[in-house]
Image 1: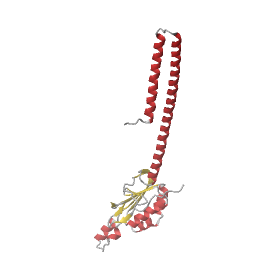
Image 2: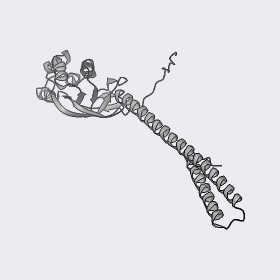
Image 3: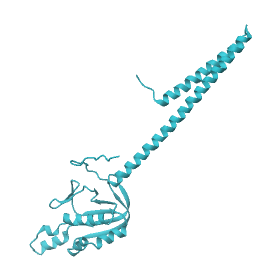
Image 4: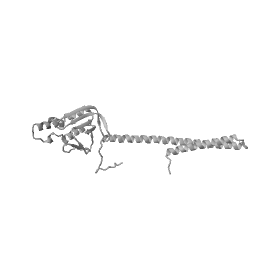
Length: 244
């Protein structure tokens, strides 16, 4: 059997009492319009009807009050739900699960392709490893940006979060389980001047410049960093219930 919701019950009661009130009014009018054999019985009937009408009016007023209270509680419940949704969005934002945009820097680092071609033409003995961008270089750059307070970082449009790894895959890099190839584009959201200064004065940047790696570093008023897209799982960690 289908159960009525609280607000449906309240509306039904209002309609019921309104109908009863209408019936009582009709009966009263019929009683007064019909010639009475006994005036006393007519007066008594009218008084009874008036009492009944008063009772129904009180019931209707009570039901309307209950309906108003229900609507108010419903609004409060909706407000509570919106508050919970806001807290959830804030948590997802901090965890990197939502895309963000704002001021920051764009750092581009490429393999030493031009130097490699010159080495080939000159007949030098070539170690390709010397011409590639290494995972350690990218990892150090990302860590320097984290340390200075970058609010969000991406590598080739892969969002970097606390669980992200940056590791070597031969001639490519891997992060979040995704294959990435040069050029490597690091985007960082935060105070552009501070982020730029941090990288340029850091040891990693100086080492790359000293080895003639192609580098560009630009400050931007608005950059877009996507949300973390890889699965999130926790194998060993468990939720700890805090004591009251």
